[in-house]
Image (cartoon, rainbow, N blue to C red; front, side, top):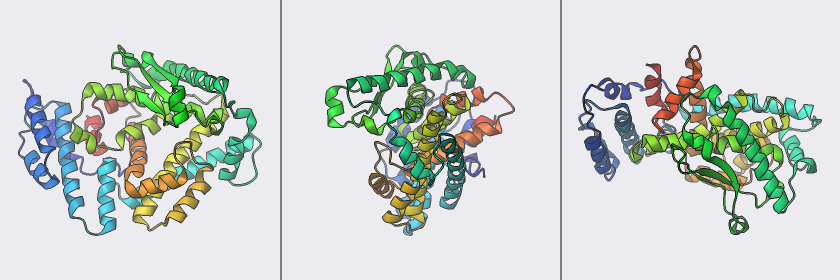
Length: 400
């Protein structure tokens, strides 16, 4: 299915077609966007439609097109009475695609089946052939051979292992990217302070500057280190650092997309993090470590499960109990920062958000697959060059 990036792509076409020689009126348009952001959706839309699009450079054209798409959807959401119709609009807004709930669920279910089948084979190779995939993942997660000690030595060892994975990820970047900012050389994985660990602070990122003049880091949550087996951590490295958030976000900071564009592309950043995990696998990260591949695939099941809970609970009438049972049966144990009950509650509170992450991940995959006859590095560069953008607007840009 290719519904993620095809429909209504013409929205950006007019703006991009009007890029012309001469000084782009970017500052004036940014000021208009700032003022429009203060208005209710219908008034914002009217104001955006009056902006002169002639001579805009690509970044500003994307800002304006995304802001208009977002205002149109927000205005429709505010007037939607039927809950299912409202959810369908929220999904489009959150994801930056035009996928319907049924299409989103079908895409996600198809991928979950493929991932589950691969995990089952790898677990069988590890001597875990009995029981469901979820049951076998639970047993592997409790195997003491893969658990760090609950002390400073164990936590320091986990961070050292993650930095070794990071160093290897850095060497693979030229296979998949042509535009590699200096930031990537100033990225590390670090332990939290003892006070933050004791307080149970969630993992967090410090974004490096584009040129690397200011360093960046991912501070990993290791308070409950016995729930973080070694085979689960490599994919965290790829998602949070390279080629994930600490590659994408410095490029986004440099592009400086308008907040209205970011609001209309809410699933882009997390979608990139998941796609980055896949890129690492495609570059051979797990060729010599099948247990780390199991960890990578379990993280994918976590993302896919969240998306199906989101759609199931908000569009298909799943009860909370059904969503909880589904999650347990799909991925085994909950991940360290996302108890199943918390995830179900968040899917209710932020409809469309979890599904948006998966739709962006699979949307990036579709956009790159269309250009496989050329250099995938060029496509990756262009995906990241302008910062978070609705995929419906990126498709025509990449096709040029």
